[in-house]
Amino acid sequence: MGLLSSKLPDKKMMTVCRQMATSYNAGIPILRTLELMTDKERDKKTREVLLTIHDDISNGSTLEQAARRQAEYLPPLFVELLASGETGGRLDAMLKDLANYFEDRTEMRRMIVRKSMYPCFQLMMAWFLGTFALRILGHIGSGTFSIGGYLADYANFQAKAMLLFATAAMAVIALWRMGLISGVWGWIATYLWPLRSITRRFARARFFRSLSLLVGSGVPIQHAITRATTTMLNAVMERDLLTAVPRVMSGLTLAEAFAPCNSLTPETKEMIVVGEQSGQLEEMLRKTSQYQMDEAVHAVSIATRVGEVLVMVGVAIVIGYVVISFWSGFYGGMMDDLGI
Image (cartoon, rainbow, N blue to C red; front, side, top):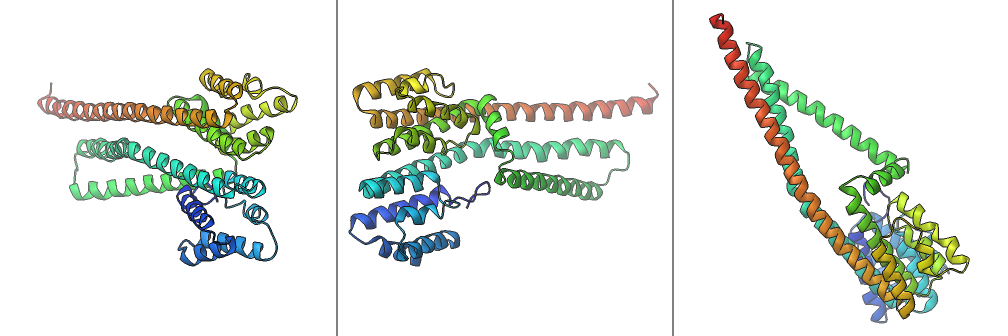
């Protein structure tokens, strides 16, 4: 499970969905499928979830009912699409779509990690080298410099800094899992650059992908919107898009219902119009999701490049400050000794 959520991670859900889809297509009964998956599963929490679903079905529950009882650990989209696939007789298609969905999300996360590693490494080195250089100036200027004493003092300083960082990180994780800061983070990620351009695009990509799957499975549009917003992971955008639900229920088209929503771009709204008018809404929603995903990847590339430049500028400033401070202190001491 992730640090910020009790849900099973996307990588694990990808494997679960792919295994279920393969077994279902092979004609293996769902109970036998769950038994095979449980026997081979190494992750304790995943094994417990699958075993509980298996036991619930054995006791007379439907797959939907068993999955809903594990909603604390299963993503909302997984539960809703399982329910839609079981009800509409399209469970095989839903499982394939879910497997593809979680594969895309897993690849997206890997891409973000890859592009963020170098700037993070630069930032880490800037912190350690910068604090090392800045603190050594004070020790040299004291007149009683000792390399052993300085290294001990620096190690103590970094230990305190790391402890403070770990405490702050644990507090943020605890507050996030309690739901106390998700709204604040949603506002920051929605309105502050460069997070704004990245998180908005990723959130829209998740929303349109989920909406296309739900619409294709026959879920009523108002329920599809409500369920799809839960995958956005952005409280501000969720509230904005949920305002379209009562407009849809009043008889407006999907395009008309989304028209006042500021979370959608004019291009995405136009694609919804085309999808409704052409009768290919599901396909158009899927294309919209892919377009937003491509735009998000491009935004991440730009942000990481900007981050690299900013880190390099910060390192250069620190180096310049250290050099100027060292030589000004050195020549200032010489002048004081000479009585100038």
